[in-house]
Image (tube, rainbow, N blue to C red):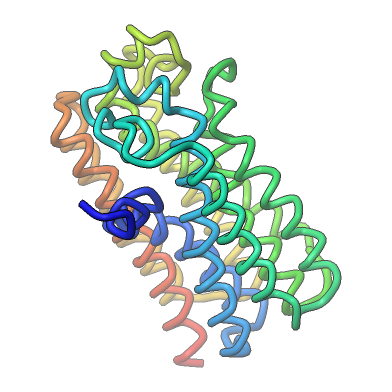
Length: 284
């Protein structure tokens, strides 16, 4: 495997699920902030920025976890852990991607640029939270949802309260899907001694996941109704709720493959929410 292929794997371009989980809430925010009519140049900037920052975050995560990943079967062959690329290379790639991402937002207003600095700090520090924070997935939710306040800032030059409520909703969603992900590695994580929500929730992990899905959808409903969205939006949330219920059937037995499938299937939950918002605005 050549260096380019290794870099491709380092930034997870072969695994787009992480980018999609970042993209859906960002797109929702762009549509909500613009009343369903976002500037397509801004949409493109945010879409590319999402891809670049997720990729940078993966490189930083693998650098931080290189001594941990070797003890986990699923991650033991990652490029840094296996010794095929160096930690310095990973940091250089992360810095380059973050720089390109910042260049993308140069045409946007000052508030968006200021929030982008906070976004980089949050993304860069997330990998270290699992060392001591009982539910690091909550911090991940902030990192994965920070495109929400940035979208409002870019389109309205302010971040209204509804944007922060949407970010809180995204935190609940991230705790739900990343707990499903953590359930896959629970045995390895217990041996290593790192913190995850799957370990913290213990035997209540499935119930916690479902409660977080419920909180996510309830907060989305409240925000959407406040912004004047109607039946199509509610229909999108209903589909998302059905998907969450399906996830219960996948994770209740706590089998690794089924939990991992549920995690990846969250792409469709995010897509359903966005579709409801986009169609509701389009059919007005």
